[in-house]
Image (cartoon, rainbow, N blue to C red):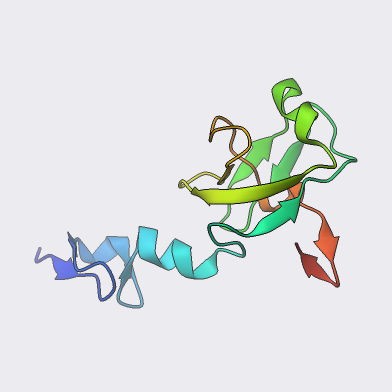
Length: 108
């Protein structure tokens, strides 16, 4: 089998790891709703132990250690394959798309 190059990051991948010319990582980045340095509010109605959906297919549980951020404005640090990272918790927790509040019909 011949490897192919991702059109965005230029790394080589097997064809079954590609989607429309992009590797899995670059394709996921095109679907991310939030970008680094976006300022969002964590939902105040989150329940400990409940699983919330992400925007790239991940499902993440809300843990007791995350509760201190409920209702607070946070800054997106980045995205790591299984959820968003925020600056305020030093990237310790993974946050799902559905853990953020909606403003004007979209999450912000």
